[in-house]
Length: 245
Image (cartoon, rainbow, N blue to C red; front, side):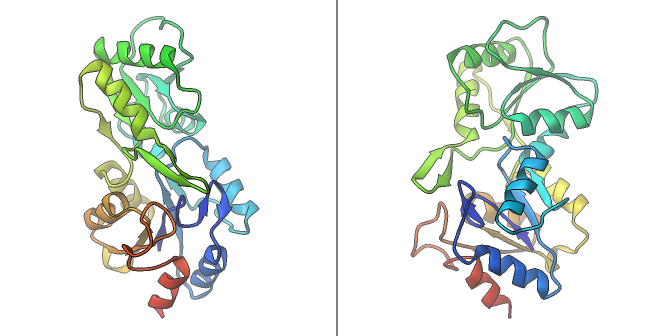
């Protein structure tokens, strides 16, 4: 099973009632679970640690949009990062020369600008990222999600920041995360299963649903995140588990 995190397992790292038990039951039935998230800000260790803190062992089981974005750059390229540490980690693992966007003028040009959720994003960082793209750098977005669910409602997502940079430069970004092909390719490479054997569980028809369609696997929509009650096919991941029996 492929499982989204925000809005499915938790809201701002607060577990959704029944989610932890449902994942444990799915694993106990002999099914494997991979967590496929568009959250690019956190490192792999941070994702795994946050899941462990609520009782879910996830070592090696998290696949993020920052990992997918890294495969849109080439080893040795100089890349400006407007995003969290998860983006920088993935790009460094790819062999890119990572330049952090701290709002200061760049020393030399960059080959690409990779943008994700960045809680320190401000006008100075927008100016630097936009100028780099105007000067010829490719614009890569970790994902296009303009919002993400929290316990207090929807907060701005990485896609909103990508849109700001794109509007400055007058270009269209290339996106890596769900539902785009780079994430499809990454999951296909990591998950050892046929498409017909996989199930994607998510809270966004336009993101998780389209991702499942491109992966050619089944999709279960839950109503615990972005999709409000009455529009989904399953109330929560526990209902998904019941439908598998």
